[in-house]
Length: 154
Image (cartoon, rainbow, N blue to C red; front, side, top):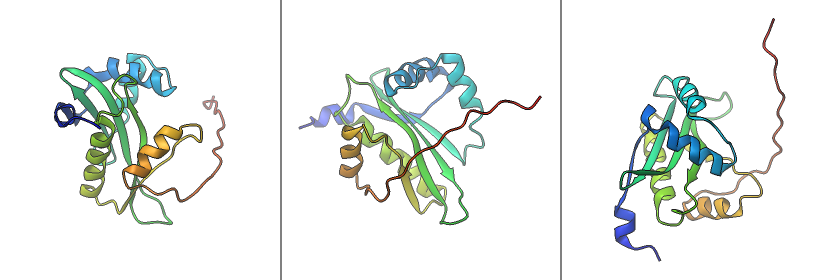
């Protein structure tokens, strides 16, 4: 069981460009290796702030996790938000950072008029699936993801 002092020592805040190195490092643990420069460029594209938020979890002065959430206006359903990425440092898992990040994203989404929050998780991430179920999410759909590389117009 988690000690209350461990949970209290984790602070959640909005990410800044100064967090790019730590976000890049953690992205590698998630399976998406990125450089600081790539993260900075991606962060610049996430405006306006009403459509995207990036939260970081700090333990002491160290960034131990991040979460990206975005509002997804869809024609077929009420305004919703989606967790686009969530990672907690492998040495810091099960100490409460993930749950606090998720709660911050849910508050942000509700404040931005969203009626639901969703998340997609790779079928191989059993531990993540259990985490979302523990945090009140329900498994409602299984689907296949398709991707196509695009070449810029000449």
